Image (cartoon, rainbow, N blue to C red; front, side, top):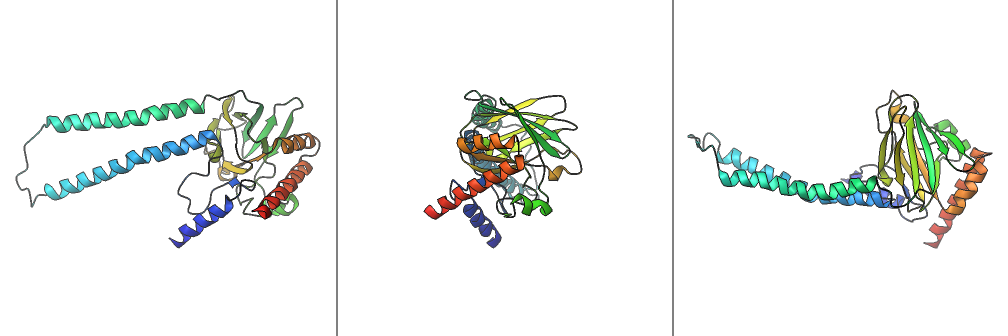
Amino acid sequence: MRKLFAGASAAAALFAGSAARAAQPVDWQTSFQPAATDIMRQVTWFEHYTLWFIGPITLLVLVLLAYCIVKFRASANPVPSRTSHNTLIEVIWTVGPVIVLLFLAVPSFQLLTAQYTPTEEAKLTVKATGNQWNWDYEYQVEQPLSFNSAILDDADRADAGKEDRAIYPRLLAVDHELVVPVNTMTRVLVTASDVIHAFAMPSFGIKTDAVPGRINEVWFKAEKEGLYYGQCSELCGKDHAFMPIAIRVVSDKQYETWLAAARTDLGGANKALMAEVDGTNKVAAAGN
């Protein structure tokens, strides 16, 4: 229990302050990562909503099971009843589940429709190609930008300026993050070059398979700046556990500056962006 509270405290500290906001797994986590999109908020709401059905149903089944064990045990009921039908019970256990399923189906279908129906046209399109075991990103803009994103080796942390494991955690940090502007509808075209992978970002509420020879589409509109982590969610080979996804959400100005610089010097553009973001976070922290 002490570890649970410690993990909760660490998570609260990690997510305090919108400027320094990020989403990643934390120790002893029992719920979803903080939502960074409207879709993820709907997913979180639906999860809480279904628990109001799951909890009572589980308790009811447990109580009925205990009642049957005690009431109809051999020692207390040596002559079992020969009743084979009870109209009222059969109506209840038929109509009851139908009503419950209707209450679950309606919001479920609404959420499913929302996940595949963008509320506006995408302003930015990025193609994500899964490889064993890294990602290729291609910005489909006027002057295209392409680069590879792979897990960050511990030996490269110092050179990349990513030694802070609270921000750049082991097995989730990458050498080059996908950078997108905040409050911008972003379309991600997902495919693969070898085997089936999966592009998943929990805090955005998106997940889709990356299939060779096929393009799947997901979209998101990140509402909070920060660094968000996901992983390949399809068993894709021996290094499946070492195929993270990192998306850095920044302001429009920071994104435009980074995009212009990244075409000629990706590493330098990333370091400049990191320095600006860290400076902004320090100012915000001082203001609090």
